[in-house]
Image (tube, rainbow, N blue to C red; front, side, top):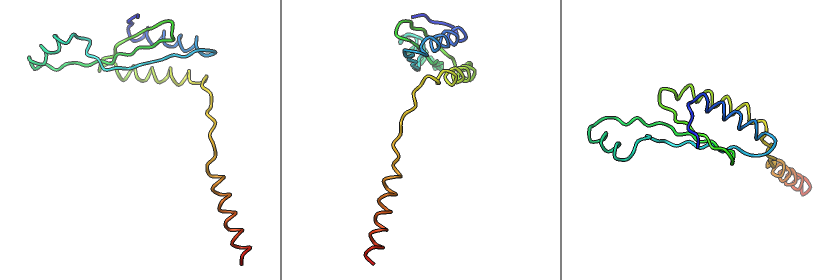
Length: 120
C-alpha cells in the first residue's frame, strides 16, 4: 500500500476512476485514526493533552491500493476536491429501474368506483 500526500492521492484516485470506466470498480474506505500507537495515546491521555484524530482514506481497484490521511485543517479542501472527483466519475453507473407503485393503486380505485356506479 502506498501512502501519499493529499494532492497526489487525488490525482491517483482520478486515474483509478478513469481506468475503471469501461470495466471494473474502485473501492474507497474512510476510517478515523490517530496514527499513533496505543502506548503513545495512553501517555497523551494521562498528560491531559488532546489527541488529534485524522481520517485515513484508502482506495483500491483490486490491483493497486493507495492511501492518505487527512487532518482537521485540510478536511474542507479535501472534501471539496473529493466530491468533485466523485461527481465527475459517476457517469459510468447504470440507472436503476424503478417500479411504479401508483398505477396499480389508481387502477383499484377506478375499478371500485365503476362497480359502485353499476350497482346503483
